[in-house]
Image (cartoon, rainbow, N blue to C red):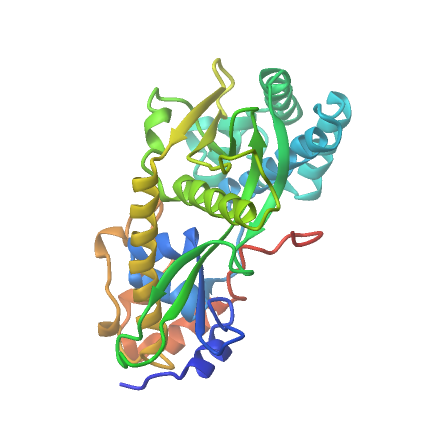
Length: 367
């Protein structure tokens, strides 16, 4: 087995590894990386270490999520700057313009298409917009605006990238092959969409959309490593700011043990919005840290064990996910159906090598 040196790891996977000022290897992993690893090691390897991806294609759910995310970021940026939401008509007009710029209507069914004939992304588009796209968008935004316009909270910031400066340490792991080597320092990275202060506590807000409410929204994200990670990150950052005298709320350090999920239903019926409070104890946050650290150790093993995948026996396959992962076939199903000797040819024909995942990337700037 060929082992990569620390320098080779940094050169090959700079989105995960770096050398600290003291020469010790550092790892930076976010929720997407670690949850993918836990879901299926083979999928993690392809996406994060080999950077294999499907040839460029568009998906309505993904691009709708991007559109909605940008619209809500615009809404809360207004809150941050002026202490109130932006002018409603201007916000809606901006969101409609963005919809057109993203060419979202490319997913629309052809005129006179029967509902029973719609499939895939076309069906998802129709379920949200029906035949009145502008009306559906406008209603969703106006209803969101009215539901949250009187909320009592201060927007601390939006689009907060964290981690590459070592703000959220997870701990250290020792090289599993050379135990006399110094530990590998591990850090959590990510990007929080929205951070608010409701007067009694500071916490992250994560928006989650669904086709329609089924009554179980409050249970769907508790437990959930995503929102737990945001709570852990904010708690860690607040503690470090207090320790350095940057913020001070008297004798008691400000901490974060909770966050909110803002559920959004795309079905044009009431209710369309439900906030859920997620609370974690210090013990639960510590258990979260330990889970991420164990996952980081496995990332390190996979990344350092070989400069290149030598056979499919080197990674675990969660074959129960091949035909249904997040309600769709795994994008690597066709690749992994072939023998390893056909790997390069299959990738060349049906896949492409893509840039490394970077959770800190932002269109205009990095915070």
